[in-house]
Image (cartoon, rainbow, N blue to C red; front, top):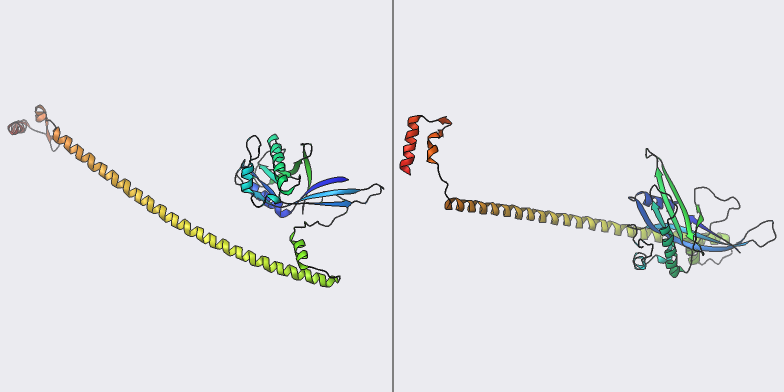
Length: 322
């Protein structure tokens, strides 16, 4: 039996992935959230041989960016399982891959990237029991004027021989990469559409009644999702208002603390200056300044040199005072 493996990435998920990468400072890492579906198909050909093939499709719905690079692994490429268990506490079973973004570089994976992919594949095999774990390497380049941005990305994985191999990817609205029969889109058993079909319990051979039942179930689900979205929006608004209030309280508190500290420093400087002046006065009393009487005749009064008679008079007065 032949075996094929492809990655299916929606336009929304691809745009979100590129948006997160472009808005990062330099490099970024994260996980790819989705599901893996497998189907056995029998392909039509002119030969009489059995053309049964197992088609595995890795559907990526969204991405989970990480706040920093090298968060869940060591410089040697060893995985920090305790950090992964904390970061992916509720979504570990939905992780189908990870991505690495580097700006203005080659998308060829490094030796450490291969070690990380191998370690992640072994780690997530414990959660969903599948060895299908892909790696996406991304990069972008811009023109000299900054008007044109070129994005490059490619998927790959570690095979059973511990060799890194590339996987074909199919992205919606970017053109068909294969010519042939167009197949209908395979929906995962966990998709919302299949859940609606299952919940509606359609057991009627009449097509019209079945379509009406599905439409009614879809409307009920839409109303339910709309109420949930409205509730979430209300919660977000309440949280934003609370954050704004707490920021205002924190700003007022910081202003009060800064004013108090400024007053304390000012008062401390004033007290130090008073102490220095008091010490200077005490030193002046203990050690009074001496006057050189021989230079008294050279004194100037109102910036004019004294006459000889005035100088003698001043000298006699000072001598009598002493």
